[in-house]
Length: 419
Ligand code: AMP
Ligand code: MG
Image 1: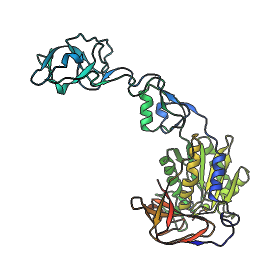
Image 2 (image 1 turned 60 degrees about the horizontal axis):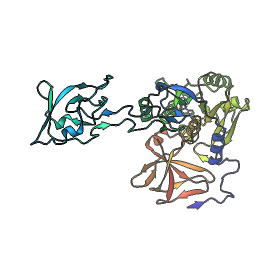
Image 3 (image 1 turned 120 degrees about the vertical axis):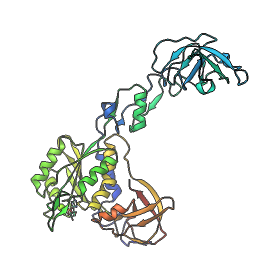
Image 4 (image 1 turned 180 degrees about the vertical axis):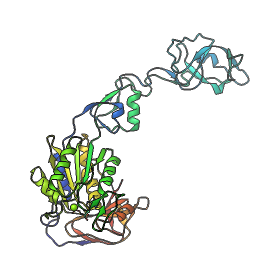
């Protein structure tokens, strides 16, 4: 391990450490106001209330099997050599809302999910009988069933007043199922934030269109919109914005109407006259641009725009820089909009399969392939910020701390797992 010889651990003069930038960003994000959401719009939302059971779950005693509702005592003596035959006095299907009463010495055919008739204290599965005979008017039992057999008790899953889901829970498939099972049509929750992604650059062309030398196909907007959706947010991309201050401001203005968070890429490098996003937003005074002690992703801008102070990230244009910046900064910030702790990439540690290098004073996020079972991570070939094909081969980011410029094969490293 080689430690760079400069003073302090935070790196090159003028560069802001990654952690300090992230804390600043997260502290500036205000959660969205919670709303009353119907279940169909609540997917991915985060509860802003504790949800308690207003009804027992299940709501009534019901049969866990297709079979016969009986008084357990009536079949207690049943055995293959001493079968017990009872008259069948009716049938209770699921959804039956009539009141059934079981007379001792009789039974009722009952289906899974049907209410257990009063007077019955057990259900005998159809498999333990002869299946009924004499046109279903009687049935023969060949084994006993104890009291409570195959009966799902009211409240056996949750009792009235039990907390089913806590505030702060993200509503995934099972949580939505539970809300529905509990009879909730609406919940108080923060919906998934809407992210709008726009790419800037005169060189950018829509994929599928012809390019001439000097032009490239635009890749960031789809990549970041997909990353946002993968992280559980909603996301839209805008058409490519040219390197023109007015065009950039107009696109942002339009996007504000429907976005909870804006992401731009490109045009924020080191302050050249072509860095149009920086120039356009600088005049608003609400977005600050800095150099972060990291690689890739050094130039970053963050602030708020529009009447609702919508958070905006201006990410660097190189695709790998934009993607890493999204995962490190935008994703946690967007989760804070839902009133929860920032969601970050899963962290682990692993052994390096090959030596790596890193610039002094900057935290490197090298692209690597992690084998979690072996605990080994290998840097992919092609570590430059435009090398999207290399990123596509990676499943992890290898962290090389600011003060470290070289690590040998076999070194232990912290690794972030890419989603
Ligand atoms: P910039 O940050 O605008 O200086 O762009 C840095 C590099 O990233 C340049 O090589 C750009 O052509 C490239 N780039 C910027 N935006 C995109 C994009 N949306 N898709 C692909 N490459 C981009
Ligand atoms: Mg550009």
